[in-house]
Image 1: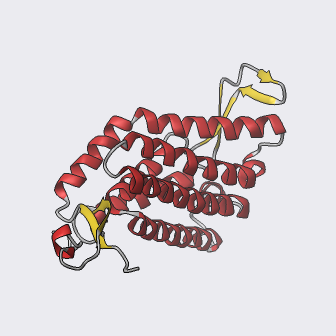
Image 2: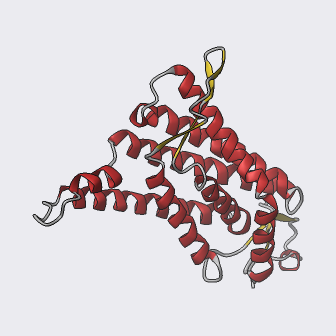
Length: 257
């Protein structure tokens, strides 16, 4: 059960109780497997994002300087929104501190993986191993993509979590859809702008029109993906709130004047 103070605990103190939004303890329960899934999605999506992807390459459509077609994305477009969905679940159920801890863990593991990839690529290849160039091409990356992925991820996830929790403090358990979508808009905008600004030239984007297309399409797709899977996000959050015994509002006595 939660160790938060209840209204009864504050009775007789002479101070009115202040009820904050409800969160569960980030210890035991489902927190660890959710963080593990969150980290796995980050790892996979950051590797996939090193590939530039285009759709409708046989067509060309521009609105002023903005290139609408072909659609320019990265190889993680289908997966990366899931990281924000899981981030929303962490923030909604466990709070900002718990989500921030998961973000720090993901950041550290990404650095470890990048370091391991670099070492593995630099190790001398055996005479019977013919795939050194392919191995380096797939797992190797440039400093731009490393910096873009780390900065975009860190800033975007922090904005996403902080926005969701700030809205929840005002709405409590009401209007879940508003904080899920609102936090995604803020987080994805920050992430997309930072990642695209740093990584665009590294994946072959060289024109202003293609860059705007890359940012707008990436942001729109990630936000739309959040909206489309909202029913699933609702169910996951409801399941965790029901099965985490510590999920309850935190009630504190107001500070004495």
